[in-house]
Image (tube, rainbow over all chains, first blue to last red; front, side, top):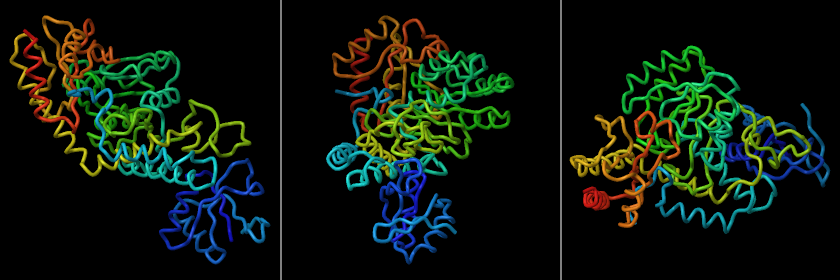
Length: 81
Length: 371
């Protein structure tokens, strides 16, 4: 699964709603400690298969994620493109 | 009780508002803190309210919709951000203390325009003559004391032509008069949630065009390691725990207003005000402050009795079950402009929950003791 780190809770909520409207399952979750640069943040969790599509949708909506992480077996890896 | 003090707060709310508040208290905790169900439910409610207000007032992004505890706090944020000590600030002759007191506190040089009730031509002429050297304009959309509807669109146009920022006090117009925030291009618009939007007390809204300085500093549930307030909205202006139950009620109130149609609400209130006026205006001892044109006045009417002071009149009305507000209505500027600063007025302000029967009954009561 992927975690899209958002700059605020409101952004995370808006991002999740936009993705859901486009048929991509998206859940707002608190960012794991390892993903937080400055403490206390929210992410949108999506399935791996939707990553590229979600990125395009959010960028087109003016809601690009701050950072993107891949979560596998409790290990978090930042994805940079 | 016949409640005619909706300009202070709308006492009668739609049923959906009571239900929303109660439901929120039972099912929602604090947004932006935990990630569990009740916290996310609260977060969804808060965002839904931002979205509803953004739709109602034509705001581009929901982040520009900020929750405060009342319009006074909203105005303080706006004024503290834009006004500077010694700078010339233009205000209308009908402003509330929530506008003038922060300006005095900052040490701004307040200059007033528009002193004649219900005279938009003169007001605009004075405004055009005085805007040249102003650093800021703060203007009410509707006078809380007299219901005078100011030409806010024209005022906004003149501000834009002269590159002077505008703060709109929409305390008495939100929910009854159209306010297109994008078209106005005002820097801020402030309003209470508990008047024409039918939310509970303890709710207010500030619409922001840009990102101002915060008034309150504290926890936002974001960027916690940062010693400064976040530099993005809404977090920058919303330190501390939200009034979630209040915001839930405000959301229900906004939706109700949109369902009813604000123009229908205004028409009903104006109709009641005019009915009341027609039934008392001929009395020789009652002086009413009413516009010739219906379109110049909201559902608010101030009057005074020639043989009784305003507070005494309000007390007599209260004894007979009619709730009104007397005095200066926290708006000494308005009363100075209208010539009523010494004793104030008795203000009757109507709501969509008032009826023709109530108006006729109150008019009769007033006529009975007016002498």
